Length: 237
Length: 112
Image (cartoon, rainbow over all chains, first blue to last red; front, side):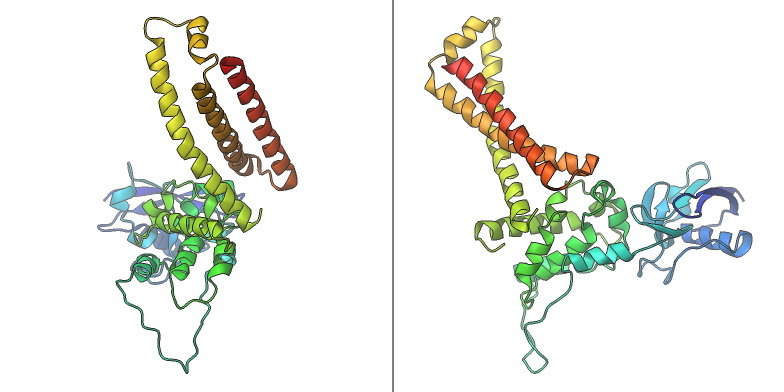
């Protein structure tokens, strides 16, 4: 049974890669590798996971330079010559080893007005929305985001412009722009048109390529560009 | 910049890009045609001097460039130099003025 040569990031931003040797197993995932290291080789290794079945997004890390869910990444798929390099998600401050500080990621979500503002109360009739309607279909196509941060870690513009709201926040804003029940449309359009909003996207499509839920933040951002352009021409912005 | 400002810049970038796409295509086709059998300044000027059509076409081209390039440069300055604020706005406007001036001067020189 061959062994894996694994480089794992240790420390904070000014840390270094540490070498470990891990036995290869059949159907082994990268999360299995990290878990093995922490349990058998170095208990001080810090990392995050939860469901370990590809539902929660907690285990997102950088594997051989690419942001992925480690529980859904088979070692056989990514290890070249029995080598692996595992690091924390990019574009986020490192707390320690493989754990990053996600606060800015979620703060930008709030800054993009990525929250629903109601127009009705519990005393009103439930809203009737046809699922095939254009706006609901657009919202549904983008709604499954679980905030894992893979898109944010993969985005070139986030790396170049620290103020950029990022694909996840803008994607969420798009779902709400398409929610006919929402009351904060104009505020949200203003929020995503700011200094480092949807217009900063260069359509590199890294987010769309890497999203583990096959969402397309690029398409959502393109939608926001169209809607804000229309709002500008109508004098609504 | 304000939301209105950012959205306005984006529209201006797209609109000027549409104009440029057309202008560049015409320009390249004309150049390929004009270069056949050799090229001389006299030949070019013979076509453009006193020609209102070329004057209008190339003035539009210059205008589109003066809108498109500075907005693009602004994005690059923000991303690669971390430049922000009023001074960036001033630089961008100056650059646009420079392009406009140089371009229209060239159009005048060739078409007047």
